[in-house]
Image (cartoon, rainbow over all chains, first blue to last red; front, side, top):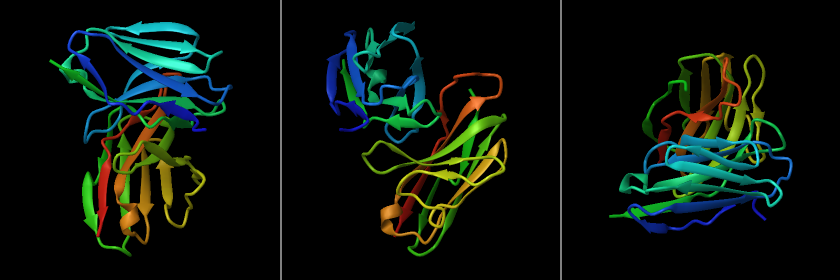
Length: 111
Length: 117
């Protein structure tokens, strides 16, 4: 079992729709969870962090965390073509600063 | 977030040679990391660069192949030694714990695209 799992996609959504990206992790003691966006040919960009169970909203982005189910998700409301990118889920390992990355989900938002 | 630069941005090298990649941050940071991202893959941590001591390497990465320096809180280098085509990848540095900002997450430099022929 991989430590951090994501569906590779591509996830295709129409412009204006909600995109839902999911991630599961195996290490129960993980405390910090991050979502990164990576455009083709660019480095990852941190867009959301979440540390407590529940929802965290930032503009069009909402991160959701359920530690009991070892599940974290990212919702993108009013999706735009500029949101088309690979989204990487990252989880800290055993309470240390080291991050474990998922393989990423490719999102395609079509007009 | 901090401004992170890497040099070179890209290079084409011959097998058997070595390349040193530099990472510079515009503010002091506690933690610096080096990652590799092979084509179409996610990020794999190579090592944590510790200021004033030896780097901490992940399983599958060794100091002889990837020596790292971290002389101060704003600068680190990664050397890819005795390169082979399998080392062709994007190498990224990242930083965390920017002074005064707790739980700030990791921020990445622009990366160095290395091609070994």
